[in-house]
Length: 494
Ligand SMILES: Cc1cc2nc3c(=O)[nH]c(=O)nc-3n(C[C@H](O)[C@H](O)[C@H](O)COP(=O)(O)OP(=O)(O)OC[C@H]3O[C@@H](n4cnc5c(N)ncnc54)[C@H](O)[C@@H]3O)c2cc1C
Image (cartoon, rainbow, N blue to C red; front, top):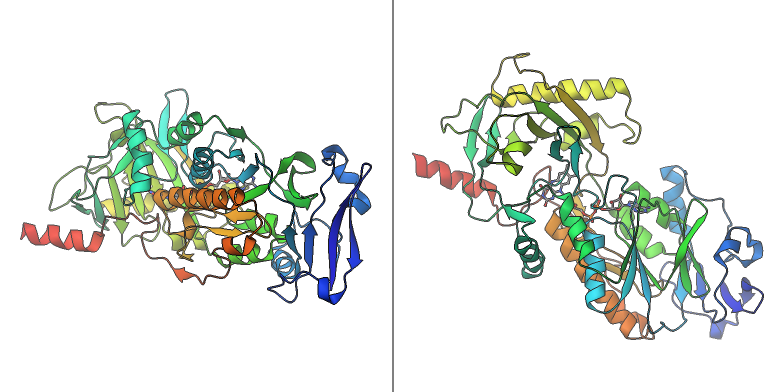
């Protein structure tokens, strides 16, 4: 077995392959196909500007390969099975800094909780329009038309999430959604769900909640838009870069995003256990259609006559959810355009999947037509009778929601000083994302504050099996047991 050990010197920081006598070899080889990379240099910090032409200064790997960026899924999978495990042995500094890659709710909750434990972090996020990931809200000028683009509302089950939500309530950023929400059967039968469990929305949409978390912090550095494309262990630290541009050095890293992008990033990072867990994750794809209408949509022919604001759609192939953002966000507004968010079913998303960053016009048109037809079917309208929206926009959430989960709050590899948080570890909701971020922050804080000398005590979630997730196509809403509630409601009406 070869191992790479870093030797610091004034002029260079060299990671060279050396032969180690069997008795002295590190033992942390869980996957026999992995090589082990030990990062232990204690010398001058490396010069990030030289990192890209370091040549021999780079960690030596068994099979040096070209960058995985842009590689096929097959080669990504292969690489992450054969990559080396990195082991940090350098002691943790007194004032460590953590890099968090992903500024969705899980990454932000992680940053906030790290700060509460006195630990600094830098959050990197790709968001061009703003922070928050799948807590996206779109404002289309000049009117503006406002749409919650992914997360629509949330419920609260856990006291730690409740604390965060109470802070938002106190600041007036969140309120309960009182408008009728229910199930809409194809043909226009709407059954409201009784509000046994409060349903919360962002007063101005979901995105401001992400901004508010950041505004509460003073030890969190935000870098956006930034797409971290490489993680390299070097000289006892993680070096991050964006397409060759150095983005800083960190004592520990958090992967707070998932899907293809995370698989690519982890494929050659030196974190095979983390990469393997991430790869087990399966995600649905969902089309979102944002549409603005001049007039209200026709009220369904429900036996319970009520104009609804949000509905889980049943029995329609192309639509699983529809909500009137205008009624939801501005209940006292009369007249004006009606901005609706429609989501496809996961099955429709899968059948009509295309690269989300490059949607062909023909597919966009087909999806708009297919989803508007689905709206007609859901409302019980005849084909072609729905008044055309004056504004439409489609987006594919290619990595929309997890369909399986290990059911653990977070994953942490203490040897590699790297963790994962995200909704998928606990389910598929904003609450799951927040709880996962908080859990990882506390776990990393405990580890860093231990000095890093007892790594084995801190390994978590590296081998847990995944189970399928149940719930709606747009996630889980703890506290809303739909079937039981609908049955209860219907029996109370007969
Ligand atoms: C269509 C849809 C509807 C939903 N509806 C609801 C709902 O009504 N209620 C509910 O509770 N939940 C809902 N959800 C789920 C909810 O939105 C998610 O559970 C939650 O937002 C996930 O947060 P996260 O931090 O785990 O991930 P994300 O929000 O996905 O955050 C990850 C972030 O990382 C960034 N990123 C990715 N790669 C990189 C990189 N290499 N470098 C830097 N940054 C990177 C991404 O841009 C993103 O901002 C819905 C989701 C979808 C898709």
